[in-house]
Each structure stands twice: as C-alpha cells, then as structure tokens.
Figure (cartoon, rainbow, N blue to C red):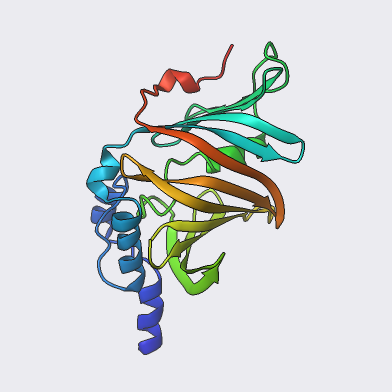
Length: 249
C-alpha cells in the first residue's frame, strides 16, 4: 500500500471525466493533494506569479542578440497566447523569418525579397512544439497529458525538482524547477519519434508585468551547444495582434 501511495503522489491525478472537461482550458487549476501537486502549485504561484497575474498577460515582444556558430544576429520575437509566434533573425543585409499562425508553420529565408514557404513536416513539428506560450506545466489537464515527479537533483548550480510532462504530440519534456525560486532553470525536450534531445538553460531572470523572463537563454541539441540568446528588451502586452503571425505573401 505504501508503494502504491508513493506512485500516486508522484503522478498528477486526472479528475473524473466531467470535471476534467471543465478544467482542460484552465491554465492553473487547483491540483489537490500530494507532493507533485504542491510543487506545481508553488511554480504557478511563486514562479509565474499566480492565476490572476497570468490571465492579464496576452502577448510578449522580445529584442535581443542571438549568437550561433556563424556569428551574432539581431533577434526580434513576438508571441501571443496560446501558441502564436514570429521570429526575425538577421542583420542589415539579410533576415530569416520564422512563424506559426496557429495552423501553418512557415519560413522566409535568405534575402529580404525571398519567398515565404511552409516548413517541412519535421521542422514544423519541432517549431510548433516550441511555440507554446509559457510552459507545458500549464493546462495540466489537457488531453493525453501526463505529468510526473522524477526526482530532486542538482542542476546548473541549483537544487531543482525534476518534473516530466508527456504530451499527445509524442514529445516528453523534463522541467527543472528551482526549489527556492520556483523558476525554470532548465528544460529538456525529447522527440519520442526520433530520439532527438533539445535542452534549454535559463539564466538571470527579471520580471515584467509580473512575468518571469530569463535574460540569457542557452540552447543545446543532443548535448552540443547551438545558440545563446541575450535579451536586451522585453515588453509584455505590447499590442501584438493575430494577423502579424500570418505567412507573408
């Protein structure tokens, strides 16, 4: 019985069908008792600022510098709930545009007069997965989502709760949540269809409109460094509107 109780305590319990249906679109619902439920509730309240604050946030604009193997580039990023995103990466000579309008993931590469086109199936799969506003720990009762506590481990100089989210799109994401600040220190996303592992490390948090923003974001693929983003300016609720995310003609 003790082992059964421990397993239950470490997996977020799904409510009865009728209640679950009502909670599927709630970002930060009450989660009940148990260790995992308490950890996630503190992440919602102390890490993200709580339900009332979260509901007031609708969009995000970020300006920064992206360093990759080939050099450093200006980055502009626009996001809008629940998963609209547009990225502009480039310099005075050229720019790369990437976007998702809720239906189509698209790209415009190379010269400024280049044509836009939908991403390949694999590129779109990864891009859409990463377009979620916030984290996959939000909306915990969405269809086919499973959340479980793995361990409490040292991570990048912090002690973190490791929480795993398995999603309906065949991705598995491990979040490493600092036990003191309840902020994300690291996330590790594995594509269960091909085994690719992408990691993101978050450093130097600030808050704007109550929302935590990491001013340095380091990305890795299969353990190898891919990029470092240094954020210079953040604007929450900056007037971002849906048509901005549509694929250009």
